[in-house]
Length: 250
Image (tube, rainbow, N blue to C red; front, side):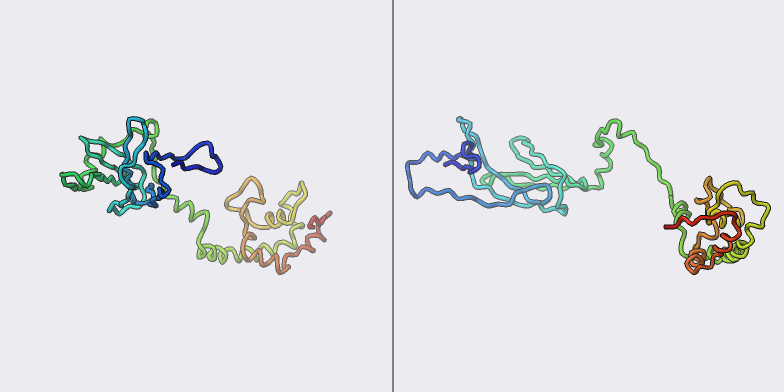
C-alpha cells in the first residue's frame, strides 16, 4: 500500500507492506489524533520498532494524553532512556521542569510520582546557571527618569500656572510693539521677521538658545496664540514704521 502525493507521484510519502494475499476487502484506516507541540500540554505516543530490513513497524495505534500542569506553553522537551525506563522531560517558558515516566500497560512495575518543591531550587541555582559567555558580563543600572519626564512634559496645572504668571508680561509686550522702531538700544543689522521683533521687544529669555526661533518666549503660549488668531498684533503699525517690508506668506 503506497501513499502518494498527486503533485509528486514518483516519490511515495508512505509505504506499507502487509504481507497478505490479494484481498479485495483490504482497507486502510487513518487514525486522527491531535499533535503535540510547545503550545499545548498534549503528548502523542507512537509505539514503533525497526525490523531487520530497516522497515519501520507500528506495534500499536498511536494515542495521546495531556500533562497535569498549570503551564500551556513549553520552551522545549527531551526524551531519556534511563535503565530501560523512558522519561519525557519538558520545561515551560517560565522555567518549570516536568518529568513524565512512559511505561507499557503490561509492565509489572507501578508508576511513582515525585515532587520537587521550588523552594529548594534557588539553593542549586548557582550550579545550574548556564554559561552565557561574554553576555554574562553585562551590567545594568536603574535610573529614575521621572524628573526628566516632568521637565519635558509638564502637567496641565503647571502649564496653567505658567500662563497666569506670563499674562502680564504678554500684555506689556503688546504695549511695546508699536514703539519698537523708536528704540535706540537695539542695533538692527539684518532683516527682521515678525517673530524677531516679538522676541526683541520682550525681556531677555531665562534660557537662551543658539537660534532665536528655538528660544522660549512669553508669546509661545495659549494667550499668544489667541492674540494672533484674534488679529490683535499691530502688524500694520510695524509695517508702516519699517524702512522696507515684504509679505512672504502664501
